[in-house]
Structures are given as C-alpha cells and as structure tokens.
Image (cartoon, rainbow over all chains, first blue to last red; front, side, top):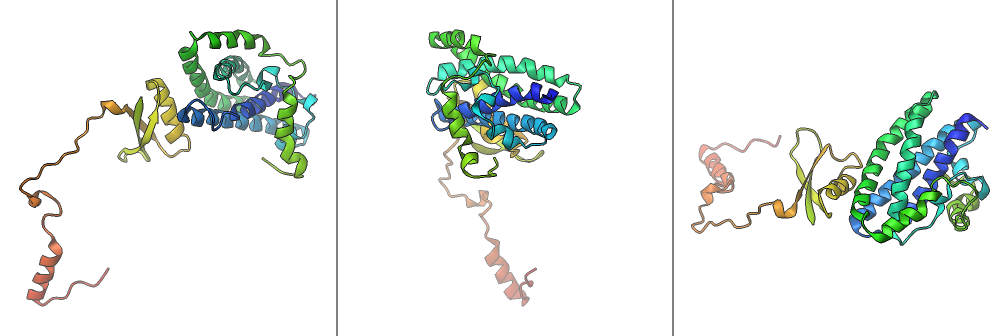
Length: 190
Length: 95
C-alpha cells in the first residue's frame, strides 16, 4: 500500500461520507439560512474528498470516481462516527460536527507538514476552508453547550470519533444510495 | 433578528443592497451573509447591519410642488426643439 493511500484514503472516505450525511439536511435544516450554510459545508467536504482521492488515484493509476464509488462497502476506511445517520436530530448533528472538526484539524495540520509537496499543498488549501467550518462548529457549540441533549450527544459520540473497526449497520444503505448511479450507468462521473 | 446585507461587486464600486438574512446574533449573521452573498466570488466586500439599526425616511413633503428642485423640473427637449425651429437648424444626426 502506498504512503499516500495509507495516509489520505481514510481522510478522503471520512470527508465523503460526512459530506453525504450532512447533505441529508438540505431542505430540512432548522432554518433557511442554516440550510444554505450547512449544505455549503457538505459540498466543501465532498470537494475535499475529491481532491484527496485525486492525489491517491494518480499514484494508483486510477480515478477519483473509481475510488469514491467503485469500492465494496468493506473497503471504505472511514470511521463509524461519520457513517451514523443523525437526521433529524440537530443536537447530535452539531455534536458530531464539533467533534469531527476538532479531530480533523489535528490531522490536516499534520498533513501540512508532509514531505510530499502536493499533499502538504492540498492540506494547506483544505485547512483554509476548514477554518470556516471550525468557526461554524464553534458558534453552534457556544449556543448549545448548556443544552442537556447536546451534552448527551457529545458524550455518546466522543468515543466513536476514530472507531475504524468495521462499519455501522446503516452504512450499507448509504453505500447503496451513494454508488447506485455508478453501478447502473457505466462510466458516470461526479 | 433580521440583518440587511449590502455587497460590493468590485473594489471602488458603491455597495448595493443584496438582500437580508435572519440570524440570532452578529456572529451567525456574518456567517450567513458570507454564505448567501460571498461564496461564489460575486462580492469583494459585504456590509451587514441589523435592520432595526437602519434609519428610514419614507416621506417627502412637497406641498407647493416646487418641481424646480427636481432633476426633471425643466424638460429641455421641447425648449431645444423650439430653439432649433427658430434658428432653422435641424437636430444633429444620430451618433
């Protein structure tokens, strides 16, 4: 397994799956402005996934699409944490987002120090967008921190952040929905 | 709370009203304004301000119809036409 693959694939998978899950709020977020903002974050995450897959794909002689959509469910290396379906629970959604941004910041900062120039460069770009995601998460954290439901969600989700041992049951359905187009239309691209 | 958002399309241009966002405080308003009016490169700067901080004037009294205050007070077209007829000169061809 190449170094890029080892390093970047779990991050790319996390970003793809979290972006997918967050996009489930599109149209039903608590209010219109947040709907636009949260959907935009979801889009950014999928954009990050795409750029990361691209770097891995170059090395493996494949494409970002194939990496994103043509693998079997057991080949995805995302954490169980991002696989959970949390709509329509906004408290759990924000708890996950806050915990995710916290963990993601550390690994993106580490990637920025990479000897692989392209990896370091991409990480710096991603970090500039993530800075806004972190502001968004922080803003909501401050607003919800004294709400019992939010505090419970933080407790519940915290141990799962880096749990990469297998998948949660609802991942199967997500994988089905996510790969449906590629499986039915050969060569479809995102 | 409603915030009014103004955007500047290019440096040096006047800010124009872009729309409004609803947000619980300034911090959220900044985020939402950025997302609604700034993320597609359509603005180089934004102003956002609470709607209740905006002073409004919507009454313009002109009891004596002093239309000489207004830019449309003196229609020139007719006068120009008359002057040209007196002088016997035709209006200049369209440029």
